Amino acid sequence: MKSESEKDKDTRPQIREPQQKRAIEKKEKIIQACMELVSEKGYRSTTTVDIAKKAGVSTGIVYSYFKDKKDILLSALYQLFDQMCDPLFELLSSYDNNDDLIAKLDRLMDLFEESHLKYKKPHQELVSLSAVDSDIAAMTKAFEKRIIGKCMEALEQRAPALPNLKEKVHLTYHLVETYCHESTLYPDPDIDYSAMRSEVMNCIARMLNQ
Image 1 (cartoon, rainbow, N blue to C red):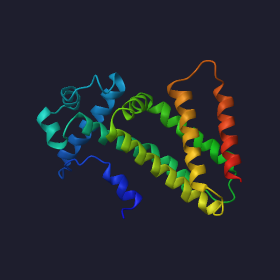
Image 2: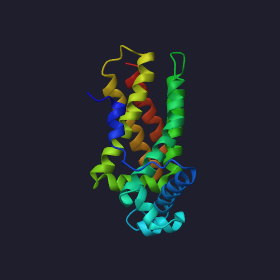
Image 3: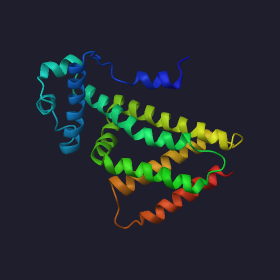
């Protein structure tokens, strides 16, 4: 049976990995160009020719590394997810029994909000594309499982006997994600998001203190 990390790897696009420095730089420029263009004008309005032009390479070079435009986007999103995960995983790895849960949740909310604001347009594109593209939906699910797994590892040290831990962490993740999507991607002027944030943290704290 495959581990969770192996299942996660299965969702990554199978791209040719260059060995020489110049080739590596070209591939990275292509990925970066894709992310910038998607952020500027959206995935559907971006073409492979656009990506090649912005990266300063020929379309032939692009196709030597990637199958198509979606392949480039998946690679770009995996890089983005890794960048988003690094500070989150650092926070979770430092969690211990002496930490104040609300203070830790407050910092967790900060990290999620900061990543949604920093990468607002890619997030909006991801939400839209996940609903219609099975590959992107699978990638999003793998990302979700990585975060939930890390949260469970941190909490098992603090409260190993907490009942229904997996389900509570799953709910925690989706509460935070829903709040971030509402407050940063699609804000409603009639909602007090400061109050909503407090309610989300209090709800999570109650679940995790049972």
